[in-house]
Length: 268
Image (cartoon, rainbow, N blue to C red; front, side):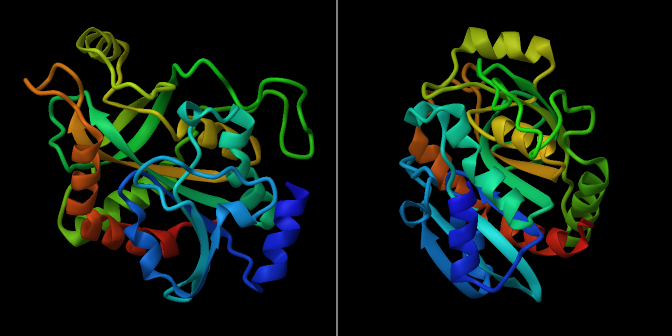
């Protein structure tokens, strides 16, 4: 990570305190940056490449309406074969680079029947069923404590900002619990029924390891899911990744508007 941080310091004078992670089909926000550089992950020492469809695999560093900002256009996933330490490498490197506020987005399946396809939902809490944790193993005290608290993993003040901005734009931003699985297969209808019983509103294959690693380092987090499909068994049709990407394109403008309004209001 030290080599990655040194590389970033060598290619830009900016030291962003805010960062955004963009999920499947949600990469358009990076185009809103001014004075930006786009660095392929393959050029950053130690940074894992993103092979998932709909992930550009670039780190953008620039300015958004005067706010220095780092934007990860794509992320690494467990299902790509990365160990969990690599999945969170980018978040940790940016934390060491000076980022203190992290906004994550993802494409998620809707379990809560009140969520429509294309809805944006603020994550209020999570359930980790991925079977791994980025904090497993010897603790690096330079990053954070051995037993970090996760009571407010998704910052309540940040969520309040997000709801207020959404209301100003003209739509409601509901909240929900996100359940994370390793993937890459979509869930079975029986699994979705079980997850609803557990209290999950959304299901996906990312975000949770990054939030755990970020909170371990003391970063404040906000996460927003785009309900790109209804989870298995809710509609009488199969789920496919093309549908996920198409819905991401459909909500692109609203998400860009929401993030643009949120980021300057997030205290660090």
